Length: 393
Ligand code: FAD
Ligand code: DHB
Image 1 (cartoon, helix red, strand yellow):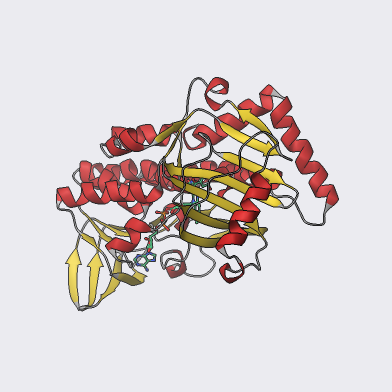
Image 2 (cartoon, helix red, strand yellow):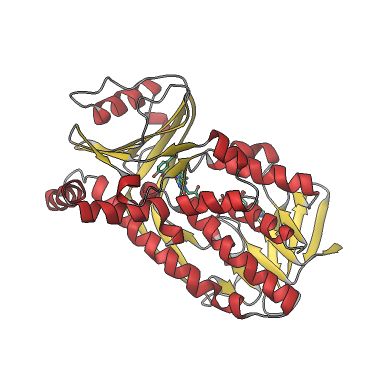
């Protein structure tokens, strides 16, 4: 089998893997990124949309934020819609003028790929890592399968940025890493529609029939979500049924009904939490969804993935340039502090906005929680800080 040597092998070209490769490249560290999917697939995979204040600044400081600054939508507030009544949470007023940026994850991915291609750094699509070995040696390696056969890539470090179904955490001997998880009794049905957004700000809606979220990608593209039961499949959701349900849940006595348009993308995502700890085994480090999943209600998944590699990159540089491993040794503990905080916030948001079909006690508690956000400035301020900037607090 052909063998290649690099300093850092990165598995996965999602936001975590691509930003890590970029940051290491800025510091003169050689990396190889291996991605199982095609270039076209990763550039068009519709996922997250909300970028935190500190993460947006970091992307800009790292030289990959200019299109985000030009095209991203800066939002100074969000709306909570409760039983047909709108309540604005003035994020920027509550939190020192800071705002979120609405910019699609696939646009972040495109910007990072453009930067990497411009630098000529190795980035292989349609290449699947099938095994990781030598974790506890100084020469960990991966085997990559491509249409041309198998190659081995050996590095000083291997970084698993391969998402929630990747090979990296599964390659660790059983029992070496803890896995703590929770499944929520909901899924999200998400659509991307060629329709002008009905509002300027995101709407998180709690309606007796279920959760709904109104988001957007541009002045002509809307991104909407419906909370549905985990048993639901796309086959039972015709376009007509999706729009009818969105219109019912998002209705207010004042606002005009939402604009409809052709649905160009749809999917159902189960809601779950996962934390893998520690985020390291020997010279394999985990970052992003490979180490943790949050329910999407807090809009934290991509932000956490980017925050992980913001921490990991200087730690790898210190080890490779100065043989100083202190930052690598503290990486897992420091990341996990942020991850658990994000799990707490995402659980809080989820359990405030997704009514249960039959549990009236739970529904009473949820309404009281929401009322507290609406009625108490202190509670709203805490929410604003976590929503706008949790990964940098
Ligand atoms: P990924 O983006 O999953 O990238 C991992 C990559 O590794 C993939 O490209 C995969 O193909 C590749 N890979 C896997 N296995 C292998 C292998 N064996 N060999 C090679 N490559 C491999 N987050 C937010 O912050 N804000 C939001 O508003 C938000 N909304 C969301 C809405 C939805 C519907 C969903 C599904 C997610 C949302 N998220 C949100 C979460 C966010 O999309 C993820 O947290 C983010 O993609 C994590 O990035 P990552 O780089 O860690 O993993
Ligand atoms: C979007 C996704 C989220 O999970 C969220 O909480 C807010 C917005 C989005 O895709 O725009």
